[in-house]
Image (cartoon, rainbow, N blue to C red; front, side, top):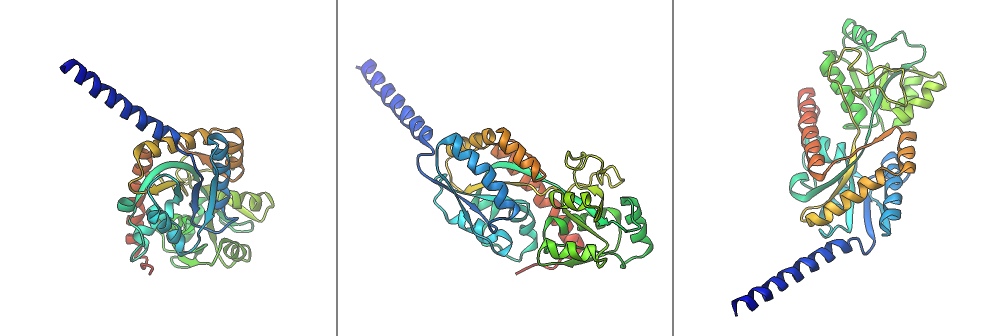
Length: 325
């Protein structure tokens, strides 16, 4: 009797395990909505579509990109927060929405730790430190020396408060111990035009934006924000090499899901993303845009988010940057 009961319970347990495996293995079996918290055509959108297109090929699922710009990305991430935690609505989260904004805004419509589940680190982007082609500043040390000689006279800009151009500039100020003016712009092109017109002394801009300007002879790149030299600008030293030891600003991006998304679904999606990032067309596309593919588990992505949150909170608080509404 006991033997029959044991066999019966074992059969039930095996059946339940097989059912759970089948359910997990079925994901994804309907369209996935991928929320991008920025406008169509921008770098986050282009990079996301490059990866989601490959993800759809690999999984056979339809992946629909939904652009939800506004409020420095906060609107789109709040949409992800409110979605059903089933893996069928996920979103693009980056250094701003998952790290910088937590210290920059008085309040956010989401809590990164309580409302979101990290899924995968997608890629890293870096900035170039550029000056006008006719600038007397030829190196990072030249810039530091001049800024120290003329405190408060030099200026740099960025395409908005809290962007990596701004944060990278504040990190530079802190590490170089210089006093320079920051001028926020409504978009990168306006800042670049003022640099070319001599109304700004330097900028930190994405390497994909800087490369054509350097090649045209309009600007000179004197440093990059990575810890190692970049394939896109192999002759340009890192700021770390130039004397600011440990300087690094990474415009990283990744994928997040609503809190409560089943671990097996998160793992399945992470594995599919890792595969997509290895596709030759994805790697070529990323390289063209100045991005480097990332890798790692959801836990490792969470560790990155935590490190970056602490790093930029220290910079924002130290610079006395006024909180945004």
